[in-house]
Image 1 (tube, rainbow, N blue to C red):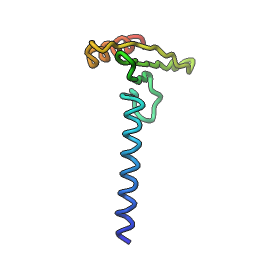
Image 2: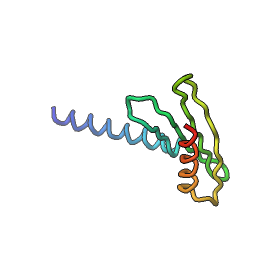
Image 3: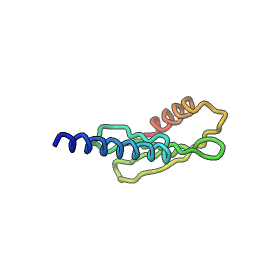
Amino acid sequence: MMWFKRWLCRMVDSARERELVKAQTDTIVSARYGTPNSNPNLLFKIYRAANGFVMEVGRQDRRTHDTNYELYLIADGEDLGDSISKIITVETLRI
């Protein structure tokens, strides 16, 4: 019976790795701020574009329960980490 447990663990691990690789190719970064049980205030995703990256930022309004989205373009020559930190700072100040 121990062989079945090892086989099942290998299958689950390989499925988890396939999903992780699929998620990384579709979306480079997807993060949520807040605790897992609370509603996030700020959501962002980064997609690869033809000449750089597109960053989609969503802000959730707790009073009206609406989510407003903004798109930012990051050119190939710009530092990705620096640009993301500036965008997150600006969006955090808007909340």
